[in-house]
Length: 196
Length: 379
Image (tube, rainbow over all chains, first blue to last red; front, side, top):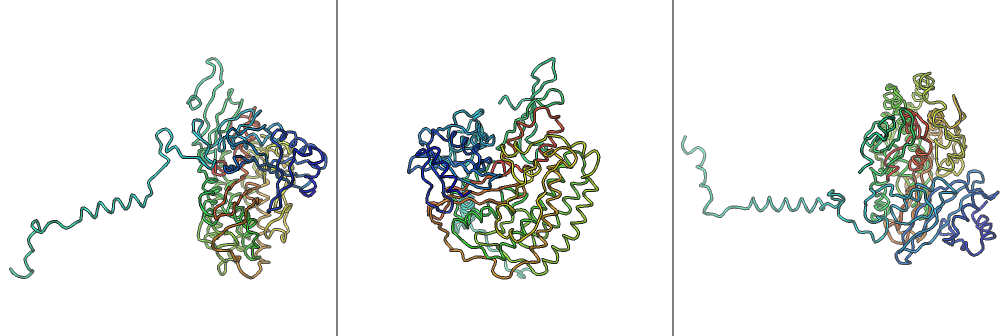
């Protein structure tokens, strides 16, 4: 089945809660209303003929200009051999949506990663903790406005540019090697062969 | 932190919580498992990952499109060629670039050689984790030859940076084809030798068959990919079912786990599928070298890469299964978002739910059979 046909079946079932398929800029996608994502996913997985049993990827994109975080679902079907991309938009200030862990188990770790790196809360997730970063890390690094804190438990994560450090050492060495004043100059050694 | 302390839960019983890792030889990298045991039997093994997190996805937003290519090597250092190819294909899709045929064939050859090298490490370390040291040395010996061949091709032995956006960096050197064919002749007999050495060893089979069974439905539900998925009986290979690059021109089989000595989806199936896959990769390399077209190895790529706004995903069958790069462009010369979807990440996610009831020694077999590579989990 083509992506258009899958999208038509979705439209027939959910109406305007599933947005239009985007203009085909390489990979098209459809935006789904935030409240209905679990219903849509369960329908896509169980409906005969669609059977999108493989959650290939679940990730997010931060758009500060539009003030949204997009959650991106790449779905595929091993039986029917077709694909579709869904997106859900959520407010940047307090991003949250329902977890699809009950539909695909693999969403468990993907959602933990999105929570860790973007700070999106997934309601109904059984074990929503940070996965890649330490539990007491501050901030969510893949957000566009993330500022590094400069360290973690005394371990620095910023480093001077090595070129700057080298230049400093260079300057120091040059200052030390400067010629001394003329009065302190040691006497010239006698010409060779003079006293033989 | 409390979880880092080895402690008895009950003074009279045998239950304990202990840390398996992060520096344990059988965890294949820096991974920690917080293991709850009751004597020798596991109650639960919870993976704690992230020790190798280097924020590669953030780096992808900071450096330009061609500049990210050397970083992709670090996604999977055992099979870096696939990580190169995945990223190259994603950006080529964004740019709507056509890669010259010779470059596609060279990509297939280099990738299949890398797949053999990666699987040799996988099956070798698996035997070592079970307690047989010799197969590891045999595997690494053959891998050395592949490393030499790839060094002759692109100058590097581990982090290749060989595939580029629009093609490959170098054409193959003179007489390289004969060297590869000589190696493959040797390698086909080596596989039989390896089977005699370890695969059909009675003790080895009894340690692996019927252990930590993952059914086909579970494998799909947890998003397992590649050899781990095929070992559970799901007949799916991106090279055959959603072909990319030069793969439509080659004939090769897709080995599927049938329960060679136990049931489908046990540790032995995950091991033996990889052995069979190496033989298929050898066939692909032979066909590719035979039918290698002439011509350019690089497409005309603009010096300043600025794709139209849009998004593309590339799917590559890497040694650890489907590797997907999801690249979003906003029209500038830097990617707006680079996402790496790697097989090891989802493979780790299944361990917590499969582990209850296993013996401690079986956990080692399970981790080894899933063939996870730590930087691919943490990226």
